[in-house]
Image 1 (cartoon, rainbow, N blue to C red):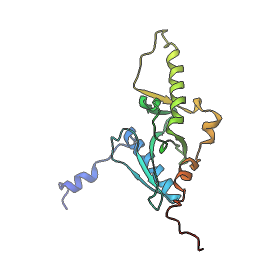
Image 2 (spheres, rainbow, N blue to C red):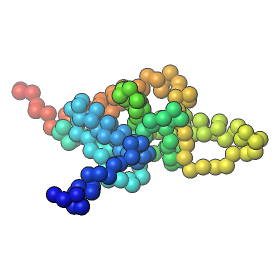
Image 3 (cartoon, helix red, strand yellow):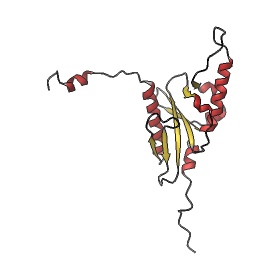
Length: 183
């Protein structure tokens, strides 16, 4: 092939090494899927721009499923979550997984019921807003919230890599389809 061919020219193009926030978010979703698949569940990333959840997980029988919103951080600042996370949902099958990507290759997962995470996110934002800016002025409302390790309680720490909230829900055996004992 000559050096002027499109294929040759494309091979010379290099992508930037710094990951965009979008790529970091995608990586977190796939890490969650991989971990749940490793544990024997079918997990799939949903199409982009789904406002409430990013991953759907089902047990191998397909008899039960849950939805997961994934938030990924790869910095020291924390997880950037939407303002909507402050609003509890009437869905016991909705979870949030906070993914902490470390440069050493060790990934940590913090697993929450959606409604359980709503309160600490709201409390952290309320505390932030009550503090004046550096110049003494009042802070302005923003459409996102930061949640980081400095906000963690003992309960948050116990959630690290503890998938039981999700796996126990999906491990429930459907007694309606279980074979009856011989009489």
